[in-house]
Image (cartoon, rainbow, N blue to C red; front, side):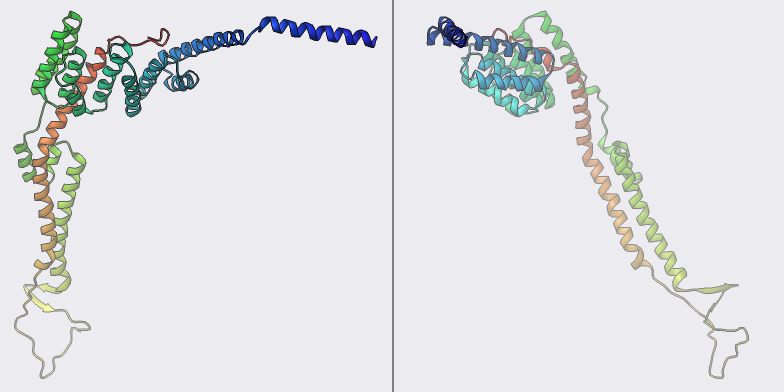
Length: 353
């Protein structure tokens, strides 16, 4: 019985060994098998990254993308993966990190590839978003690309350079040469034309308001908190000066005034007090005091605040007007956002091109 069991075990073991030899007959067979598995794994990971990005799960897409970079670092898909890492950071408003990965693509790929061109456009677009306007204008100087000319127009709008903005938009519209872009440009021209209708403050009227009462200029500039602080400070200094004078008069010379006769009020003086032989009652009692040394400091402090606030409001008027125009432009830019022009070809994760 034991011999029978031993023989069955040997037969089973030999059968297993020979079956494995049939499956993996050589090293090439093993490599082929694992290559197919790795390829399937890569496609699954790429599909998952693409799904996460399109659904707006940018942080999870980043994690999956970094796994792709680690596992398939030499794969041709890597530049496209770097591009979508940059896109994730861009959507998350981490502009410095986005630029880092756009630059990786730009440094690695040929200028004629879709991923290279898209990375260049996105690089300039991120400069626009992060208000690196001088860098954007410098890098796109003397270029005749319609997308770049559009970005330049938006940059000039943010810098309040209306003529250059209009010129850039006209050039971009001419290069696009399509009715679709004509419609997109129209609101931008209207925004530039309507800049003069933005309600601004007259600096001389602000100065007159400041001269009429403390904080008047600040109130006219809608700086209510600062205006209230100036009005309160000047009023407090005036009150301190007035109170000091009254206190000096009343507190330092306490007298009884009866029918225009001023008699000193001495301590322990009685009504039946008899003067001694050598004592004499003066015919007149005169008082003199000077409160000027008490009200001069608050007067100068209050006057200094008054004058300084008036000059400051006059000086701040230009800055306030600039901010009003910037608010107007920011509103128009948000309503006619530059992302409407991001319709250039972009690489696709699924195709890997």
